[in-house]
Length: 134
Image (cartoon, rainbow, N blue to C red; front, side, top):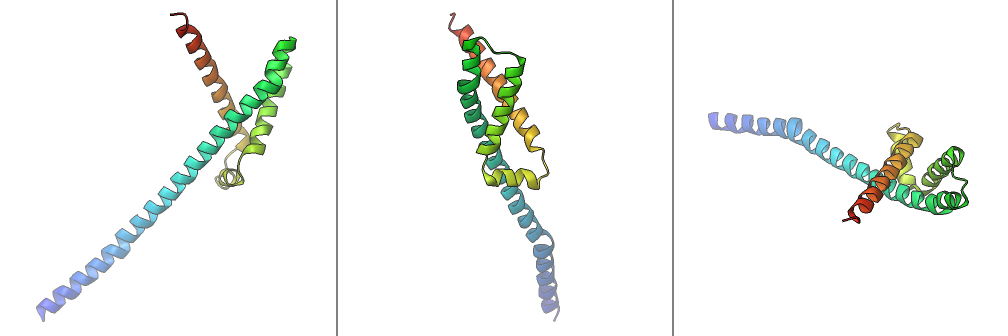
């Protein structure tokens, strides 16, 4: 009789632990894994789209304006807006939806990523220019 009671109690405890601790842990783990994969997808899409758009705008607007001697603050603003528009067109629907669902400022996010891309390119150009002197 006592043994049956112990077995019933231990069975209830196992059920309680599984349903109260283990299942919520697994659900949270899977949710965070899914959220992490979505975030990585957004970062990859945004990074690739910005890099491609900056290349395109550099070739079609920046380099031409510099060659013609018309590169100025107004052209810089125009080129930046063209880059933002190009990124907006190039982002996947899924990325836009994830950003929208997270209530993030898409234009601000794109602007910061473009600025980071341009800064990285300047640093790389400086590094390669300095390293070629040796």
